[in-house]
Length: 109
Image (cartoon, rainbow, N blue to C red; front, side, top):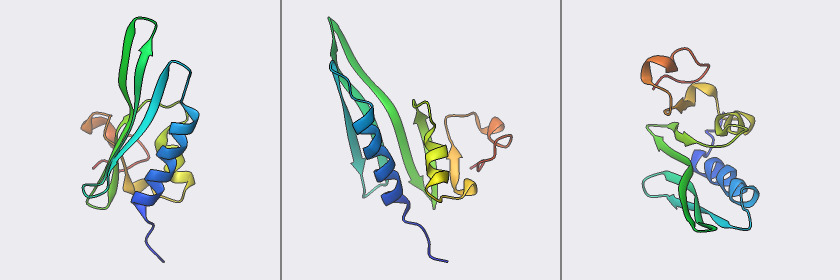
């Protein structure tokens, strides 16, 4: 069986989030570092007099696994990855405490 292209899958999923998360007050930007396999979606702009700047999604690919460090979506990036064919044992919910990860259906590390 052919190995899935994790960087490509992650980029496609996150690019879709940049299209669906935008609103009239802020911009949603997709940042990626393909040399180090780091991918991020951020929200940036102004809402009235308040500065908006925050990380919506942050993912790293390390040692053949996809580490979800931040997931501020309703659907859940892990669910989208599974839907794209990524096995659960290759997805780490890094935003959960290490001792809690073993109670999920996903990889502990």
